[in-house]
Amino acid sequence: MPARLTDVLNRLGIETPTPIQRATLPDALAGRDILGRGRTGSGKTLAFLLPVVARLSGGPRARAGAPRALILAPTRELVAQIDTALQPLAAAAGLTSCTVFGGVGQNPQVAAIRRGVDIVVACPGRLEDLLEQRHCSLAQVKVTVLDEADHMADLGFLPAVRRLLGQTPAGGQRMLFSATLDKAIDVLVRQYLSKPAIHEADSAQSPVGTMAHHLLHVERDSRLPVLIDLSSAPGRTVVFTRTKHGAKALARHLNRAGVPTVELHGNLSQNARTRNLDDFHTGRAAALVATDIAARGIHVDNVALVIHADPPADDKAYLHRSGRTARAGSSGTVVTLATTEQLREVTQLARTAGIKPTTTRVASADHPILATLAPGARSLTSPTPAAVPEQIRTSPGGRSSADRNRDTEPTPRTGRRRARRPAGNRSQRAGRAAVSTGRATASTGRATASAGRATASTGRATASAGRATASAGRSTASAGRSTASRPPAATAGTSSPEHEAGPPPAERPKSRPTHSAAMFSAARRAR
Image 1 (cartoon, rainbow, N blue to C red):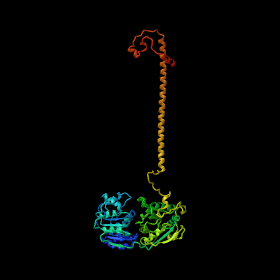
Image 2: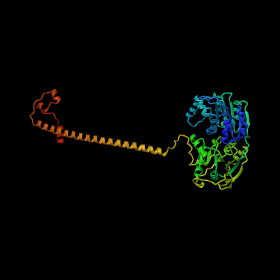
Image 3: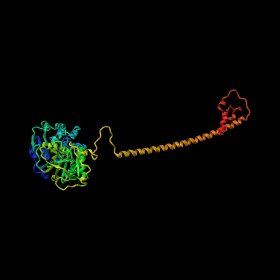
């Protein structure tokens, strides 16, 4: 081991290697392929980080877009945790590193790789995206590490992992670390590891001597009060649920009861997940409610209590969840809550996991066993548990009734029915409609006024025409009387063109007019 790395470990207070470190470090430092199995919290991270940094020290600088070491992990949180542990070691050796994972923009990651980094710590999905876009090449990778390989298999990442391993040089060193080794891992071992040194620090079901397991048989009505009592005890508490909506609902109820709580599940953005983990790390939150996403690789110091609010799906999930406490030799307590319907299932699960928990029937939050499991004065920041309006109940399938009540996130409806829009949008639409109606009314008023003015003009014109008609009638009557008083004169047998055109009265012949009696009658009526 290089002296500068030993100095870093001494500064961090790490003086004695864990069993998995003691078993794997000699072969890993010698460049052999490694197949290592160590339980959660056994120190696997340093078991591969120290050889990676030691083997890259003193080598050539990394070329742009071509890292010299690759570490793959299944979750963003685990990637960030590995990089945090790597930073002091890499700085001492003069190496650089970057993280690559989804849920955030890729531009900063691409920029870091293009500048040239020695070690890339990545999730398989985002790294494949960057390779397809030709932002990165694995042709210069000297050391490849797979951490939590069994979890990658559970998440369906093995096809992507095989494609990534296929792009690394065949002669490079490859190390595979996992909490459990099963058939899916055997495929990777046979295909990509060359005569690996196999090290198992402990058996798959060996219990941790400093971890105490308890099974609390509770009724549905007492489940939430028991959770509030245990979570409000001194120290950090991690509570696991099976579903994302169950985690969200339980975190809300604990906060309402006065227990500062954050949540961690797949529905959160990466920024929210990072912020919540930071609140839990720094102590601003006393409890973390999580789904199984946090069961792998999330390391928080001094977690005193792990609670399975919903029983885990299988024995592997139980072991990984429980591994959030009693890490690196410290002590911890694991509590599983089970209703009458779940009791048989949980008992069988514990037997499969090789665990013999102490079973206690708990009827209420006043049971003395709770003070034994989580000693210390309870601390609530706001309302008491009695003020919580509704308790969370769990069905045998693990789904809580809080997921189905009005305080939880609504379940999206299926079919063609449109979702209800927020009231604010309806108010905005009503306001816009009122404005449009006002404008239309104003336009109608202006049009009516114009029509009125036009009607008045028409009336005035009609009156003028009437007066002109009356004047014409009087003139015609006068002319008729004048003509009637004159003597008759001979007229031509045919009319001339001038007569057809209607010559002025002064030029007309002095003959008897051909006006009808009806005209004279109309004229008299006009007068």
